[in-house]
Image (cartoon, rainbow, N blue to C red; front, side, top):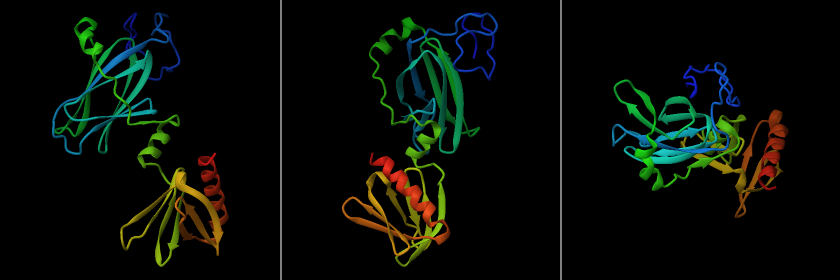
Length: 242
């Protein structure tokens, strides 16, 4: 990133709250001003694995189809954009002081995600931006990267416990927003979202999770962690029902 005034390269560790250049002292961006960014997923139109995902500032997720353009508005200042295709990630840091065009593509030769960031000619793009439809995000969270992981189901479990459900033995994984029971024999995964839970009760040393529609999920877990897990689940379900 360069200072728009003196063109010096800004330090990589510069705080995103700073609005002055450490070299020339000039203002880096205009407060409370919005700019348009065109984001294009270029390259192979039949991209194996589908969309490229864009995580904006670890709060907002957009999805871009191969060959598609989307338009977003962002506030002037520092922004982090992470592009993902399957297991590949590419993170860029952008100081937004103008309207931009960003082209992202998966390079099948190098196996990397490539990005090209360019300031746009406002006159040339005037008609494009005037008719642009602002993309709606796929997901939004105020909990940062962990919040997006939770929404995507990619977060790490708080607890991972050997458990039984009826005659099935398996693993009970307890997350911040859900719990999952999986049994190796049938490869099925039983998911219970806390937003669907009505109550959690003790039942003969087991956890009785009552869901909407009077559906009960009962899990037997080791005694040494029983009270701790019961307390955690009760608090998480209570937070959803407030």
